[in-house]
Image (tube, rainbow, N blue to C red):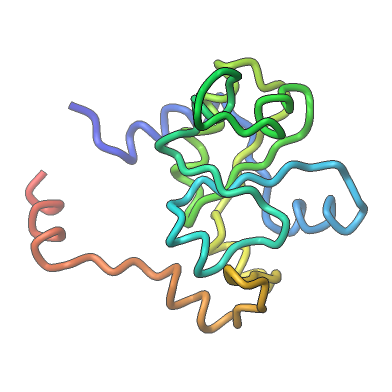
Length: 157
């Protein structure tokens, strides 16, 4: 049986990662980058990068392909376009980048350190209404809140 971190570590050598400051530079330069936030909708609504699409990890594959209820046309037609995937820490996005490469995406990357790192670099985030989210508020959102029962089970594995 493999642990989550082992799965992530296995794909890292096979994907491209981009640091928050490098992504910020690309956005500042006006590069045509498709930003895809793969977190759950409630996470996205709390704080996200302005202009990013919310495509939850659970429907990513069908969102990337034509002919499904979840198809996101902008994403399904972006196989040759630079795509940057983001999540809270960069783990879910790493796995997603690997899968998207298998699906033929040629320029997909994962945001290394995720939105937690984006926030640490003091880059702008907005809420569901497009209003700025403070660095301190975002830090609270991106801090892991592991319950005692979750930690106990994690420690015994």
